Length: 486
Ligand code: NAD
Image (tube, rainbow, N blue to C red; front, side, top):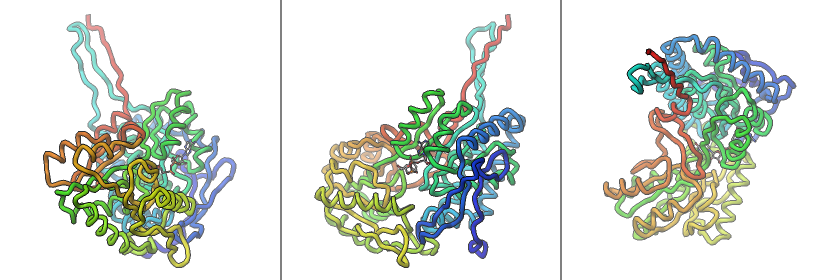
């Protein structure tokens, strides 16, 4: 792993296959939240740069990308998946430096998911077809499934490189080109993967990256008339703003927003498995996970014993240096995020919840945005800590009484992203899965993802799907062709 010690080179915009400075010359510094030290500088895109990137994406869409046979598009995407694996150590290190997540997660979970996205969607490039239809014997009617055009993708800081896989792989497989704006806190891996895309033979202009501020670079992408579709992952508030703004140019929009996902443990569950699932469901990724099982609903007969064991497990999860391969709880993404999460812990205690584990900041080597794995018990579903997305390692435990009460509490929230059910009773598992208002239900497992399974939300968690065959609907449009043979 000697390359992991190399200094990080400054990040630049990737426009039309070239690494360039911003037109204004502006740069920003990206900081390691675990050490509070600068990692490197990154070119900061403004509206002019976004315009250049969109024009490059348009030219590629109508030029080299459209001329490539689907099988060659497929090969290039597969190769990009291979290159991600070949650069696994380098990419994982960049991700951990930028985001503060344990290197174990970046290297062994995130890298694998990114590579699988490119490998999985490469297969779809040759399998997108239209239909022939029978409308009238004297006519020949058929549909063509075409790319939507130039995609603008805006992504958050919690899974920076996974989000590149989720957005770029299907968009390109379907023949679109893309301009991607990474989150300002975590721009490094998107830039590096765009460089690898060129190495993989993806033509210049097909995959552009414009790091910068949401309200400048992001806003410019949302307003640009040359962008046909927006794929956004981020907060509900920004998602709403984006949808209103995109209405002006009538862009196709998909939104993957926040969550407050219920993880429901019934008394008949395999309690050891449920305990592991509840812990990983909230503390994986420092709880900065849109699908985090942040509301743990526990059936009353097992409630007290379960909470005691949970608190014991949480206390054992000590924050540590994210670059240490043994670390399982890294640094939150920033001091600002840590302040926000800590203020929720205070709110919870004021609202009457009991702090049974954690609840404190815990710097590592005197620095960083680290905090303890935190469990708040005795939570009422109406409390703010049960209703609002905290986006940190904080679990709210809510007791319940039977199936109807579990479902009512689970659904009584503005979000509907994910959910978990722990039970040995198959009938109960399927019935509850059907009644939960969520885009994903995990039964006797939590926080699992695969490029072949769609992911997205209902209600305040947004609409449209990433991943799976379902997401290709979002990246294609249907054209009807009528031919008069008479
Ligand atoms: P955010 O909404 O603040 O930012 C997301 C992205 O939007 C960033 O790239 C940001 O620069 C950009 N942005 C901000 N303002 C903008 C504007 N006015 N116009 C255009 N772009 C703008 O969210 P965040 O703080 O980066 O990420 C955390 C949030 O993302 C959480 O709420 C989390 O639940 C959500 N999230 C959802 C999913 C999902 O799949 N549903 C996945 C990950 C994160």
